[in-house]
Amino acid sequence: MPYLHKLACRLALLKDAMLLLSVTALACEPVGLTDPDFGVISVAISLKSVTIQAGDSMALSVSVVMSNGRPPRPASWVSRNPAVATVSTGGTVSMSGMVKGLVVGATYIVVASGSKSDSAAIIVVAPPPAAVESVAVSPAGANVQVGTTIQLTALPKDSAGNPLGGRTVTWSSSSSAVANVNGSGLVTAVAAGSATITAASEGKSGTAALTVVTSGGLITDPTLVFAIPRMAKPAYLVPIWPSPFGTKVTRIANDPGARMTLPTGTGTWGGDARHHYSKDQPWSSDGMLLALQNSNGGSPGDIYLNGSTYQPTLGPCATYSVSDDRWHPSLTHPHERIAVSGSELMWFDVVTCTKTRSWSLPFGVTGFGMWEGNPSFDGRFAALSEGTRMFVVDMDPQSPYAPYPSQRIGPAVDITDCGLASGCSVDWASISPSGKYAAVVYTTAAARIYDVNPGTLALTPRPMPKTYPGCTGAAARGFVYDLGHEDMTLNPFDNNEDVLIGKEHCGNSGRVVDGKLIGNVVMARLRDGAITPLTNPTNEAEVRHVSTRNYDRLGWAYVGYVPTPGTRFQDEIVAVRLDGSQAVERLAHTHTDDSGCYRCEAHAVPSRDGRRVVWASNWMSNGTGGTATIIQDYVVDTRP
Image 1 (cartoon, rainbow, N blue to C red):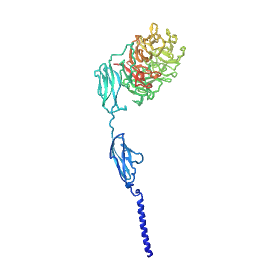
Image 2: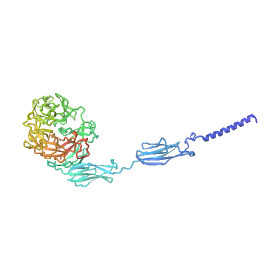
Image 3: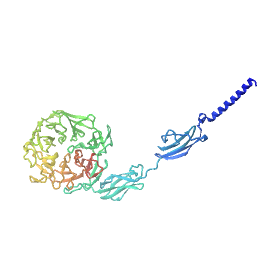
Image 4: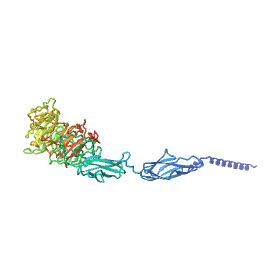
């Protein structure tokens, strides 16, 4: 065979061999190198359409069919609108996905493997409303006067106690002749008696027990002994008429953390929202404003409520920062505070934020009369002290003296020369209501009276005719009957004499002194120290504080009593007549537990006309819903 022919044959055989090797290699090569589906023939999701509730979840699965019987390739999952529904898997790719509905709407869940995919339509619907399992009615019980109304509220709840909104509530009364109720829960008291008000929703109901009382006036019998009734804490600004007195009681401080709106912006109610003290009149002279301290998380720290509606009205002025202040008692200065700050005395209008008068004092003083003083009833005089000396300021000089801005300040007198065996530590000092006298009360409860010289304003101890049994301090040094937590006023039954009224502190309660049976409340006349017992000591509860800030209803002192079971007046606020008749008006129980808590003490203070009284309470004495550390103000209103 020629050489060239043999070469051609050999090349042909080599070509066939290479072709065979190429085909063989191609047959063994993985599919993915040439197939974009990686051998995936089809992808099928388990459900094409799913309806689920918002908040619920459902599992979907996917079937992936492969060529040549290979194991399924994993699939990837995605939601076209994850704001409506999401899908999650155990890893980056998975054969199953967990779909969760978030909000009402529609989306698609897409599952893919290779270039093949499938989808499921997801419809998210609102869950059915939870069933009503209970209805809470507030207040759950109240005493209501005939002819008045009280607003009840109903709150449907689910099985977990969660409030349910948007439910229909129907109201009914067990006795419409006693109290009827309209479709919104407003109850009208018709006649004396008892009625149960029912609020129903979806087959469940709640009730409120109402007692309707007649408006027959205040309880004036001083001999009756009342147990403190167990009473639910009233809601904010929702009046109740608790037994046995049937007087209207309103909580005027909101819950801690609740927001308030003021002209200067928003504020927050604190856990200690109450007035200052029993001797500090909280209502302005025109009754338009009521001053409260707002502490323990509250802001601002001082607020002024509307004196009638008790809604927050004003916050403090940015330019007003003082240590202690009082309302000016005159109607000609209705919104001015008489304030002290170090060595400055001022009048400041809290509505216009204007300082109207100012005095430079001879030395820095402590509060207004050591925190418990007051101006004279006409707002003209003030006695101030830093604990060792005292002087008088004429804030509104009258003829023949030069008028303000002329500064008329008397000389300071040493008040530590008391001669008491226990020392002369001063508790408080104040001018008397008439401005004729000044009083200094030492921490032993010994009370000392000074004459005020009308021309020079100089102070001189006023000698008294006698010292009473058990009392401290020499009469020659100006000491009168020892009293505790006292206040001063004018006695209209005794030619408007200046008097001091307080808790008996000489140990004579139940004894006869000067032919008079001494009770727990005693009045001492400043002119000569003569005493008048104002209450009978028989089974009388202990006195806590006395207030006589009722400028426009002279002749009464307002007394707060300690809760002593089985005694007369326990836990009560009682108005006591100053004529010695021992006549009383019994107003309300305070429901406060002040054990070891000074701010929890009621410190009851009457309004100027004496028809309303504000007091502080934690509602922990025979009360439900109170908290030991949450102190709030309440008002009892005796007006028809």
